[in-house]
Length: 254
Ligand SMILES: [Zn+2]
Image (cartoon, rainbow, N blue to C red; front, side, top):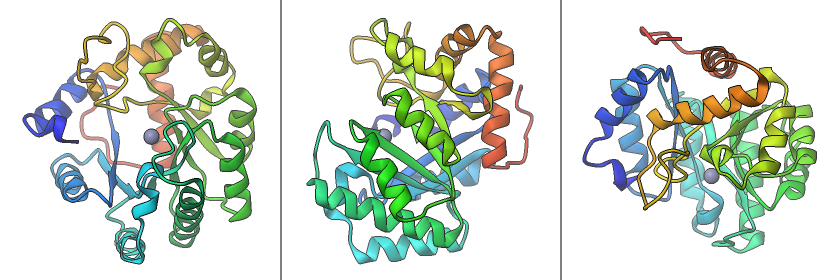
């Protein structure tokens, strides 16, 4: 995102200094510079892993060229996951049909490439489950920035997915989401930033840019919900991530 143009590498270093060990960073193929910027970061930092896809918001702009590009990136293992892909019935920036079609095509592509997916779902849990089942997608992946209900979480856990919580988990009004987070099996939990959006408490407010170093605050809340220390939860989420995305450790702190 352009919000990080002035200090992208320093932002990554701040995250590692804060205890983050690895970062999965998704590019959107409909945004001109996105993939090149992320590929360069992945080159510079061995534990920054790239992903790519066409987001639900941009589904109406998905072309055959994008799919070919995605196929090439997957085949060359430039990317470690296909995503973000998914459905967003809150914003509805693309027509529902276009969203479903883009999701199905990219699920099929990920299955063919043997890659997991990063799924975005907003008010669309039932259709996400239906698409995954309709494509017989069994490659698993991440339910990113999870805000759906426990029923959706449980159905997707059954389908091999990890559930990733963002800064929303720290928001005062997110009691229902914290109840879901308390029920997800420990070996399926992840934390994320969704930066530059959704800065966790206490960084939230006045349009402040979120960044990966702040994910510690989300992990702290998640640890509290599970009766673990921050260090124990950090070990849990790092282990879960490494299980799906094996990476070379380079002196991380966990
Ligand atoms: Zn998303």
